[in-house]
Amino acid sequence: MNTLELDCGRNSHRFVEKTDIARVKVVDMCANDNTREGRTLRRQHQIDILEAAATTEELLYGLGIDDSVVGTGST
Picture 1 (tube, rainbow, N blue to C red):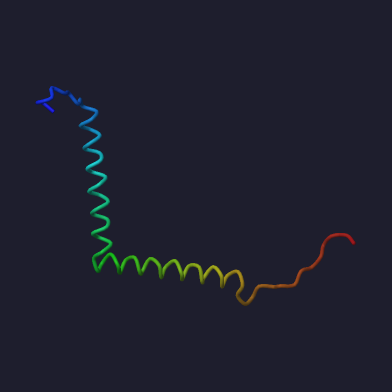
Picture 2: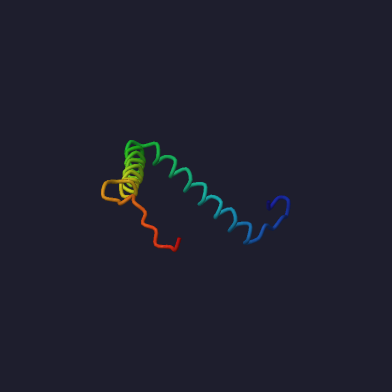
């Protein structure tokens, strides 16, 4: 840039720094997901989600819920 006598300014420099930081974060997250620990955590998270869904379903449709409807309105 000096050869072309261009001045990029501080905003350009900040933009490049932010972009580099974001890129490094994405690469680090991908690298962590590919480790054995990352795969285990992902698998455990999925199991937790499925268990929560099953528990919710049991609460909604499990034993002990009275299915009878008693009309209280006028006929």
